[in-house]
Image 1: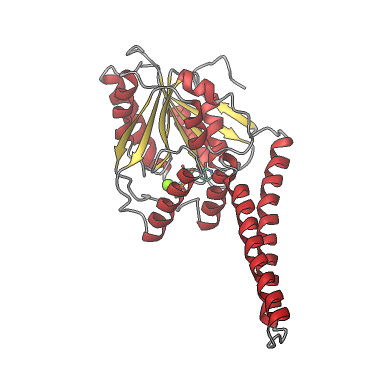
Image 2 (image 1 turned 135 degrees about the vertical axis):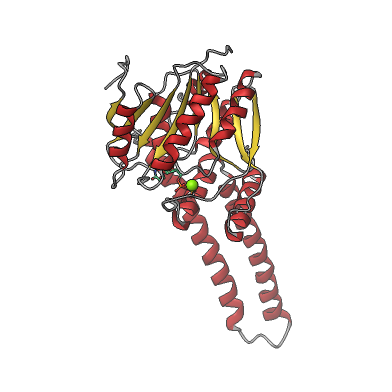
Length: 324
Ligand code: UDP
Ligand code: MG
């Protein structure tokens, strides 16, 4: 791991016209200062991925490529494919030795990249950015996030607590990650699967400086469930357990009903004893079918082996071998 390692910073951007004018100079400045300190090679680059934005994002990226001779690479996807796919497209476009992924909104302060690069030079292949405090989050987001991470851990999924997608990877770690062919990505879980020496860098997350979040509650919940169903079959096991418990309870109820009928005089067939097991078993069955259906749907999606994105353009002012 030499000091002339090249660095790529990869930034997925979706409708970030309000944010890019602020984040671009900061990110370029981060690169420059690392080069000045001789921590990375002068041949390092910023990759901006336009994830099918509907606003002026590509025009801004296009201009940045022209303005910063060879320092900025623009990657344009054919349509909006979501944060994880956009990030993957950026990662696959790089050929640098060190790769850092970061959001466009400066919530993860780019000044922490220097500490990540130091960790890389200390021999780590993966450096996870970990949020020290969640002060800038609402109580709701903090509460659900904490519950989620501990639920994932209980189900045997190895996640770094409070780590999202702000991280550094070495070329060999990234190459290993790119061997994973699933079409529905949960990168923070996949990187853990890859292994290699790793460390963490703690930082305070800021709130978004401009534009609005592209992850409303609905998307957040769906991403959370996707993380669980891609990495754990525990919910299927839970169904079996629920089924066993429900059967046990029904058995007890049957014994009680029969006992009342055969050995007592107050055997007025009550609606409760019919309704309770009916509702209970009915709901357990529905829930179970739903969860099994979710996994089936996932298998269906993966079976299709569709490409995860299509490139419309790669733009850089310096000629590169893998231009399209
Ligand atoms: N993003 C993307 N495609 C999408 C949604 C988001 O590339 O479909 C990018 C977005 O531009 C940002 C990053 O993913 O750089 C994280 O999104 P955001 O900040 O809105 O999420 P939050 O921080 O609120 O979870
Ligand atoms: Mg954000």
